[in-house]
Image: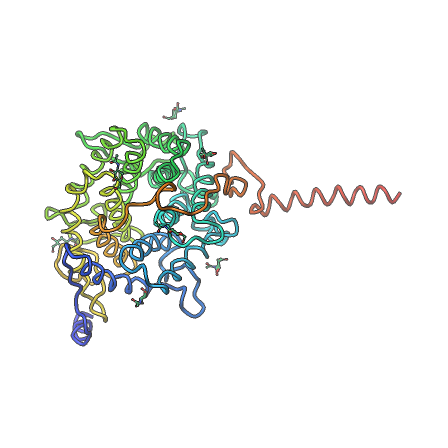
Length: 448
Ligand SMILES: *[C@@H]1O[C@H](CO)[C@@H](O)[C@H](O)[C@H]1NC(C)=O
Ligand SMILES: *[C@@H]1O[C@H](CO)[C@@H](O)[C@H](O)[C@H]1NC(C)=O
Ligand SMILES: *[C@@H]1O[C@H](CO)[C@@H](O)[C@H](O)[C@H]1NC(C)=O
Ligand SMILES: *[C@@H]1O[C@H](CO)[C@@H](O)[C@H](O)[C@H]1NC(C)=O
Ligand SMILES: *[C@@H]1O[C@H](CO)[C@@H](O)[C@H](O)[C@H]1NC(C)=O
Ligand SMILES: *[C@@H]1O[C@H](CO)[C@@H](O)[C@H](O)[C@H]1NC(C)=O
Ligand SMILES: *[C@@H]1O[C@H](CO)[C@@H](O)[C@H](O)[C@H]1NC(C)=O
């Protein structure tokens, strides 16, 4: 394998991605190799492929995560590229689902609150970057995501919180977790800032307070964010795994809250999360790693976990802009990680395929969509100050608002609040049968 790739690498015109972290052109050129590598996994342009989906083993949520990164790459580096714009637009819009709430009916065997939430992060980014608006505006769809997620807030167990899963039949329905709640917190904070509307900020506060009571934990003066807990023990039997994207999503959500409210407490929360994240998710040379599954030189990260640093990198990028004081603090970590990532992008038959371990100075023979995503987004974090900050509705953003979007299209089938919607086919079928029986019964009665 090694010699095979070695020979091909010699034949290729480019055999590594080089990057000058202080030069935008160099960063964008490096990123173009990484983005093109990422698009090798895109199914939407292939014969028989599904628009908006990436090759197996990547699930629906991985696509939402990928589009968030590609959207930044388009905005920061390649905004004149019509074919890339079309690819992102079509891919993101196609997966919105019949009710434009990012609960497509054919993903109900995999979609959890966190999956919808990660798509939500990409959709609200389209709003903030003023990305070409479709007929059903990005903002209305972000609001639909917010409304449907918030409607699942479950006070019957553990005093509140979202469950991991949306649908009762998926395993993990009885688990409440930080990433799902982090997504609701994060999206609420972004909508609050974008629309200057306190209703969303109140939701963000509600989620934070609940998290603080149950899943944030002070350990030796450091903030630990638990992964989650089953409802059976009233969410007290915690799983302690630490994932970079969870810390990132809460940190950047708090950054939006600080930028919107200007309250010192939110800045303090950003600093607290960064303090622990910057020591746990980086090596001694400030190079980013997914420490939980790094496993002492023998990484055991699964396909999902291999992509988490993309959302963590995006969160650092956003935080360093929305809390300007954090920029200088974060910059050395971003530079070291982006340089390491670029060096890892020297594998495969094209000579620019990215690897997993950015500390080795070369490709480590691990490759996939996750490796491309993480490398792309850490490079984009270098450009935090080279583009306009995320727009608001008062300043640059033009996507149309529809506050009630999604409210009556709730695919909300919590056991506690069984609702009959157009999507709840079994329920709707029973209702139709009853109505038909009444009509028929009446007709039969009238005949006599
Ligand atoms: C536009 O983007 C696509 C996809 O990233 C890429 O293949 C193509 O080379 C780009 N076109 C130009 C002119 O840069
Ligand atoms: C799911 O639904 C979308 C949109 O209706 C459709 O294009 C796609 O082929 C379906 N299947 C999969 C696996 O996404
Ligand atoms: C369950 O946890 C919530 C939140 O901490 C608390 O308010 C509630 O009293 C607990 N219920 C029981 C039965 O312990
Ligand atoms: C990553 O590479 C560094 C430097 O070679 C090595 O020390 C470390 O053990 C590697 N980590 C993993 C998880 O392989
Ligand atoms: C909010 O973000 C903008 C854009 O980076 C920045 O200019 C402004 O100072 C931030 N507000 C606060 C309170 O830090
Ligand atoms: C946002 O997009 C609209 C519609 O394309 C455009 O008219 C407006 O100038 C854009 N705003 C910015 C700040 O680019
Ligand atoms: C703020 O958002 C809420 C929730 O979507 C909405 O009901 C309300 O009308 C909005 N307020 C204003 C002033 O737009």
